[in-house]
Length: 303
Ligand code: NI
Image 1: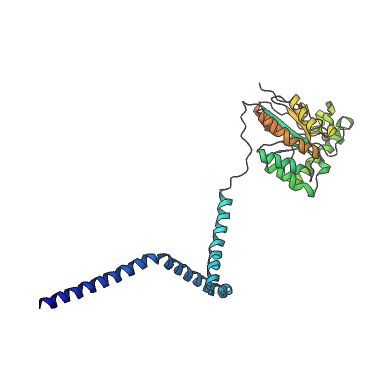
Image 2: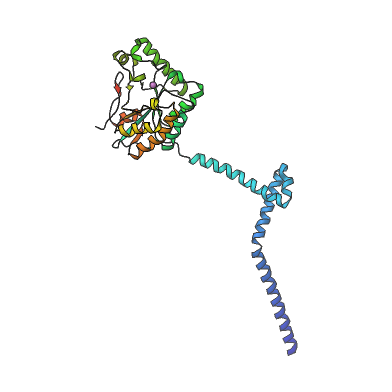
């Protein structure tokens, strides 16, 4: 009887060992299969999705097809969400903040707009987060450059008048002067929905008749880059380097390729010297200079 008991015990022990081994094997495989299980689930989801997408179901039926299909389906909404998130979180464009206690200069561009070269100047202003003042010739404004003028406004630039046809105002009657001012103002309004606050008389030419007839503040300049004459980027840069001062108004023309090239050097040079680059109105406001109709302004030095 003792022998039977021993045999029984051995059988039970062996059976227990086998059962334990099976349990371990099963549990071990379960752990190892976790990934497979997920993949299976994914594949099933893929299949389910495929079934929900009848036109793509045929692709989804093959294992290879179900993978990419699944990826595509998951990626598309993510991409859309990503784009939406970017749009929502994208900060609106702003120009650098102005510190009235620090040096500043106003870049001014005359005789445009040009659909060819003005956008290149605007690219630079946008790149450096600075603004400038543009003095547009009314008759140069057309539907081909409305977008350029609207972009000036969007970039925080000042859209001003350089009269309708660039005549020397001192040689005109009061009525003719007013026609030059009003036609340009209407053209700018048609393009950008704003009226120009400032006028730059062509050639900086002003007399008492002009003062009384123009009806808005007039802006001349203190640094003449002679860009229209030299058409030489190095010479233009030198004019700025030799003549810039705190509160200066710099005259350039956004209708020349050479001025665009010069601006690529002039702008970083001024910024390196510590100048903030601002519009004429920002300069005058920062320096406490009131802009009054009939007066003309060439700079605004610190007080
Ligand atoms: Ni001009």
